[in-house]
Structures are given as C-alpha cells and as structure tokens.
Length: 265
Image (cartoon, rainbow, N blue to C red; front, top):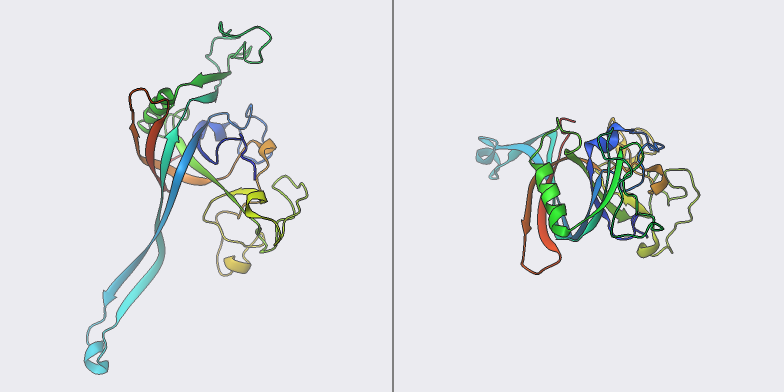
C-alpha cells in the first residue's frame, strides 16, 4: 500500500483538474499532483445521517397497549466528512490555460537541478514549494471562492483506503487500468491496493448484487492506478476550514468539514 505521492492518502481536487479531461485514461494533467492539494490527516471522521420522516401513530396504543411510530423512508441522507491533522510545506503543481511567465528560473538552484526551470515554455504549468502557512492561506482563499472560479473551486475529496474486495464481491484481480493484481485472504491490509472512499455499492458493473432494485449513479472503484491521472472520490464542498498558526512551528494544525453533495460544478 503505497501513497501515490509517497506521503499522503487524502487529497483535495480543484474543479479545473477535471476541466482538462474527466475520463480515467486522460493524460491531460501534467502529473498526479496537478491542481490537487494533499492533506496530512491524523483523523478522518465520516458521518452518514439517515433522514427518515417519523411520526407517532394515533390510537394504536389504545388497542394494543403499545405505541407505534411510522417511518417514511424517501431515500434521503446527509453525508459529511470531518478531517483533522497538520499541513506542512508542500510542492504545489498548477496547470492553467496560460498567463504564467515562461521558463522561470529558480536562482537558488544549480542549472543541473530538475526544478531549476519551474514554469514550462508555454506558460501553462508551474511547480513551486510553498510553506505550510502559504498552503493554509491558499486553501482559505479557495474556500472563500465559488463554483464560478474553477481554479479555486475545491469540489472533490479523495480519501484513499486499502481494499481486498472489488465491485463483483470477489478479490481484486485487476486495477482500474486493467493491470493484473494478486489479492486474497492472505494479503495483509498494509499490502492491499488503494481505492478512493465513496458511497457506491458492489454492483458487478450493473444493477446486481448490492445494487439490486436500484439504478446506481456511481461505480464501486477499482484499485488506483496513478498513471491514469484522474482519481474518482466524493463530490461536494468545504463547509468550514480552521487553522491554528503557532509561532516558531513549521507546520499548521487544521480541521476541515467537507459536505458530500452534487455541487454546482
């Protein structure tokens, strides 16, 4: 079980990431980290609250000696994720349609260093190392924006978790790119492939198994293959983001509440 960037298992996606291509085979993003912010989470709290209309039934208790309430299940739930951890300095990769200074040089590096030129020659890609405080400011400014700003709209949360069992209720035998995997009962959890958490069920690719009598709107994920660039997670928006700056401390503690929803874009 190796993190895609060797450090993180939780990522926030900008909507601009998917504007360049939404298919799993898309290679339009420069790399896995492009238009994505990584979080070092110590806790991830997932809450699913069922919204069922419940009301007491009159007169039943008179006849039976026991009162009864009726519940009307209209298929509604409220879903949210509470994140807590630290933010450290991080390399931020941004891809635009243009506007950057072309072939910008880092004066603190030797010309033989791979990052000596940190913007590309057409002014669409930049790779910079931000301090922990800068990353916090970046997220705060993005939370303050709306869906009309695709380069600021953080509308997808990716939580990677180990998995043995695939969408057909059998052990994983291939990743999302069709590469063969060998996973079974004897595979320890720390060696299991990673899939993004979402609310889909194992449906055998259709309205079967757990998805019987339903029309699935999402698919149970296959193990992640980072060469595909696009990672399917959970859509929604950041309800709140709180940080605490402490003098002399190189990292910043944070809490975040992410609400699962079909956001505007």
